[in-house]
Each structure stands twice: as structure tokens, then as C-alpha cells.
Length: 262
Image (cartoon, rainbow, N blue to C red; front, side, top):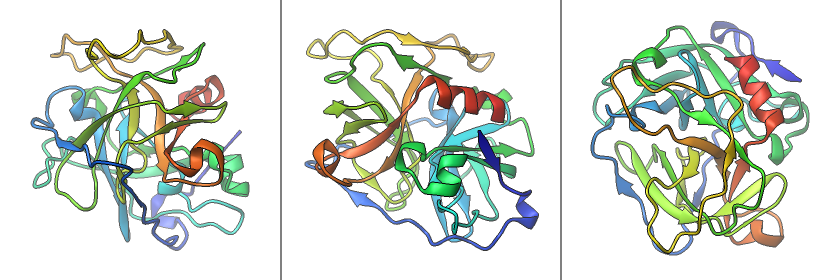
């Protein structure tokens, strides 16, 4: 079940901005050199009145992101307004231009209950910009990924342009992966996927079930990253969440929601 927002010109008042800073250990972020090449072209700087997040293209006109980047959560929450997506933004220019959000979607459990396990959503855009940028796969593993090497890319508010980091999955449960990717305001909504060409110390990556493979841009002959989860919040609660940043892991029900929102 999902809950769509009204069209952006009739959305409610702006929800309070979420500011997060959780750099656990060294800050391992590195700048992404070319944001016009795949897959960096699929990573979206998602701006709205009063703030910004990161998202990633999952179809020609749909951006996936954290739910709180679109709706503040809970029955008293409000929708973001003036949401605009800029894929491949380099910190100065938007090489692919920008598209405004026509509709916003979050799952019912986020809209009504502010449940962290359902902190994901999608923005349906007013243009098919993904036909130029390409888009990413969504997939889920059938066995443990703890110890696997992952990469995330996004748009931190404290630095211009797109940045990436690598990390190992520290722990996991049914709803979350726990990582130490640096997390600052602006990076929530970033995709987390297996590190391309991992070093020898990385374990063999568990295979992923990909219900709906997505094509890269026509000019790109390259592997397509499959998103395992969405970076959503800093340390929270008890257990592994108390000492790690949290990734809402992609599951088949989540993929089914995204397919409806595409």
C-alpha cells in the first residue's frame, strides 16, 4: 500500500528540515570526478523548499530516495514542496538539467506511523530525464551480506558536487543494513550497492534477486549497480543501530512499491 502526495503545486506546508551528521571514524568521502558518466549520472541532487537530499533514478522519470525527503512522517507530517531533481549535478552546473516532481509517494507505514523501516519513497518527475542518465537496478540478497563491501554516492550539504564512499556492512537485520559510510545532511536517500571490483580482502558478494533489470544509457556498455538499500539515518536506538549509520534495506515488497510508482 502506498500514499501519494498531491501534485507539487497543491502540496502542504514544508515539514521541518532533517539535519543529520554521523561520521563514525575517518571521513572516507572522495569526490566523483565525472558526474556525466554512468552510474554517477543516475545520482540525483534532490532539492526542496528549505533543504536537500540525495536520490537515484529508477526509471525514465522516477527518483527513489528516503521517505523523510518527501514527507516528514507520521499522521501529523507534511509533504515537501517545490521538489526538483538534478541528476549528475557537479556542484556548479546540472549537465542534464532539472525536472520538477509531479507526484510524491511514500509507503503507508511511513505516512501514518513514522516507522523507520519504511523510510523510503519516490518522486515522479515531469520529464523523462532518465532516458539520458540511465537508471539503477533494485535487488535483494537471499543470504547474509554482513562483511560485504559497499559503495554509496550522493550530495552532502557541506561540500559541493557528488561524493562517494566505500564501507563494509557491519551488521544486518530484516529491515536494515548497518554501515559506517559518512552521513551528513544532504546524503540521506543515497543508494547503497556492492563496491565495483572489490579488493581481494572483500568476501564473495552474495547474489542478488533482481525482479526488474533496468537498462543503462544507450551509449554505456558497463555493469549496472544494483541497489541493496537506501541510506536513511545516523545512529539510532539500541543494538547495532546505536553505533552505526542505518540503511533501509531493499526487499521484494519495497521493490513492488517502487515498480508501482514508476
